[in-house]
Image 1 (cartoon, rainbow, N blue to C red):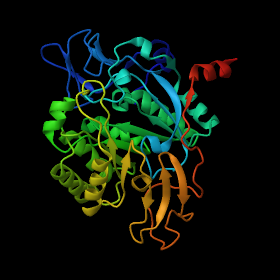
Image 2 (spheres, rainbow, N blue to C red; image 1 turned 60 degrees about the vertical axis):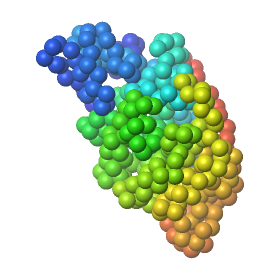
Image 3 (tube, one colour; image 1 turned 90 degrees about the vertical axis):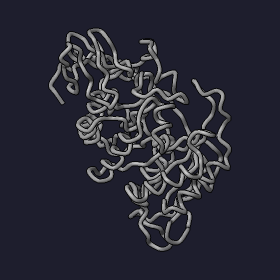
Image 4 (tube, rainbow, N blue to C red; image 1 turned 90 degrees about the horizontal axis):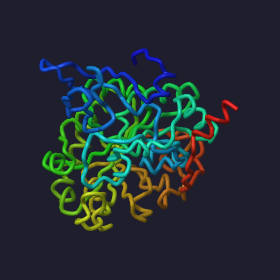
Length: 374
């Protein structure tokens, strides 16, 4: 990361960035994500948080957040990463995709400064996470790619206190910033929104290939633990053919041990005309995935104990029973292996599962910052 005045960045919310270049016509092109926004002076990119000011791209939400909350790690969703533990979650505003079905549109599509109602320095976030007993901090609600400088600084502060960093992202990022961003992440949940470029372009305003590139990069070039999520929308990305092609690609390119989460859509934002996803569609997707070799396939946004639980792919025993976000069974040895047949379960597991449960605890970090200076 480039050197800059942290105090000034926190006071103003403005931070110089490095992924951009000047075009011959005087505009500045942002090189952070494949959108490649070309901006005149004063213009902001589609993400709304990176703008051309005085001929350079600045991040205008550094240290600002739409809110902080302690969640179960399973809500990210991550089922193989410190199960049962609490994670301090936060996001900013804006997004570099334009998903018509966005379930967090009030944050990701916000153009109002008032959305950023809380603020905190990276070291404050790390300290509060530690004090609240969180094993990790998640950059979520909107995509951390667009506030990567803030996320990276927070990750560095968290690592100094032994706190893990989790990115919840669509993976829509260019090669060079991808390398820098994930260098500081310990785990990720990546939205694989569909498996056709038609869907990506029509529904999100993006393209499929950059996301696939991110997934292959994570698998081949990093030690980041990652899981995949696909929100199944009736009539858009839930056909047997597309699910078959997607899950075959995952096994062939990423391996059988990358968990896949198939989650239920509900009408929201600009897709109010679509019905909610039937639970049977999620069960079908899980079955297709497992038939194609995905060892850990899950259903989400529905009550489905079978679809939410983790099974040993060798002997079939329940390793981690789940009812929504509550753990009901734990049959892993201290080394993360099945206590019946000894087969390893991939992921990061502690000797005992966490006991956070399904609680959601909103947190005002401003109050913690005041307490620290009192």
